Length: 588
Image (cartoon, rainbow, N blue to C red; front, side, top):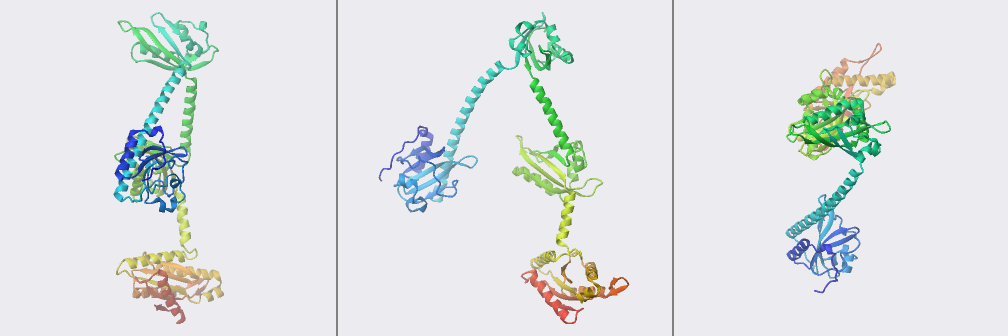
């Protein structure tokens, strides 16, 4: 074995635990060297190396990996025979390397932050068991590095906390807070320089009598301040704390928070000395008012917009309830937020029974995957028709294991009605109100699937063509021709069962599929249509226009490759009926 070029790992690589893992990998796999590297800016940094040093192969600018997925194990039995490494810097820096295995070190989020390499000067393979062991050693290495990173993070946080403590001490020293010390028995009160500065007074401009102190309190707050102090004197409260207004030197008032505590009492419990602080909270009060105004605005917005803003909670045991609902809940669910809060089951009673299982399952799935909730469902409000609702919300898991959704529910009844109308428009022939050709073919394909799926299930196809229809158009006009088509469609529809389907195929051609019917039953149906048509001629003014129809019949068989094939047979039968003299029935 020829020696390889040398490289010295950085001092941080002298971690015996990492070296131990590198030694373990090298000895277990009996290879020339094992290395652990991590990403260092735009370079790969060696963190541990066991075996002969390997030159500059692993201390270079980060290279493009010669494999597609950097998150998977790479095993190269012989790098000299692998085209991906033909011009790779690895062969240039360490030409004696023949075997390479690179196992990624994965972070908790699945990202790759380093590699565990096995290198050898002879070609070799790794079987599945060896690859599994390599993955385990890589995971141990990743865990060790992760703990190292976490320790470093904690050290940084401790340092930051100490710096923060120093800044806090400086901030308190320079903050708008003053200290006072009151002799309860003598009625004297002493103020710190910071207290005087808080209100704009110089050292000599503030007296030491409690009466003067009370004179600076806003008249509207004085009774409250004195009552709070008295309650603490009488030991009905552990401390004294009030927010009130104090008059400044310029005559304006500031909001302050006064906190204090009796620190000395006599044997009878009578207060002797009280020490406290006064802090300027004017800005905080202004912010609080702004927050209250914002909250009021948000409440107004959620109550005024169409729909219902809600907060919904699902406990770890599966029970669930609304924790908040805007005023729109009355329109959406027909109940008030208080009624739903008092009786969570009332909401489930409103959901349409056919949609309730889906409603419950959708929330369960959203909670399981913490994925956004979206559902369109029906509700039945007391005294109203069935209507549609759409709900959208985003979940968040709480510390106790429950899941909290914030979302919005809207009334989509009108939209659903429009969608239904569009569906009818897309599937219905406007003139006859029968299925159009495309929709009929879908129904025919579905019937063929039933025939092929269920042994003993039969079906028949009938093609109809109004006889001499062109002559009607030519003599009476296209308007009467349209009436003739509508007249025939009405007669045809009246004879259909719920399981049958009919459609206008184009012009004066119609088709019917009779479910669970054979040729004889189809013949009976065809004759009935002819009889009904003969008995009910089209009336136009005081004229009666006789109509006749030719009919072709075939059966739908399990051997039919498609609905088109069966439809073609009925079309051929129809052609035979037309050629045979019209107003006839032919079977194919």
